Image (tube, rainbow, N blue to C red):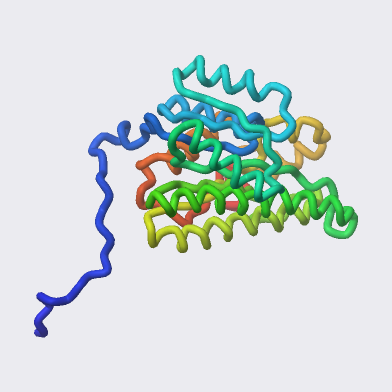
Length: 274
């Protein structure tokens, strides 16, 4: 056998790991940005992470009650919160607002690129300007947020990116036609995987979450018949309460997921398992 005493291993060192699983999930003192943080899913994500000790920067575009929601989170969990009105379609604004969050909170640990809007028509009937808007928010906006935060994370040698994708990135939904949304969410999944490989060399992690049908205001105006078809195609025969998503985002934001990167998690009641 050859002499292996002088060989160098490429193996990276293990991070410190808490023996207590409950301590692994704690986020005390960390700062989390949540885009679309005043919406149904984003607000519940914020509550979940705040309960674990995180300070929350809520990014919103048009919400009239973002400040009230932030105050509720702060009062309920004793953490620092702050709101930022921003259009994620504007990269310069995204980068500037990331810098402002770092200045306001003193640090940044997690970026959750959650802002998104649905398509209202199929690929042939969708107006080109509507296609461009959905793409600019759902795909470009996710990249802009992860990029701007990633520059901070790379400088400090650690950080977590989480992108809200969709089960629509895995399957073409019916009966509604939404080619642009589906394509953008598929892109977000692969964006997260690609960034995960790039970030790993300096200690960053990126994952995505693909929710199924969630009971939020976005789906509130959908016809009864459409929802019934959704339920018929979902093995659990229902949509989700947005609070049912808190656990996966907490896992991915925390040290409990320190060996998890480049993964996508479908939380869809079994829709894509069929």
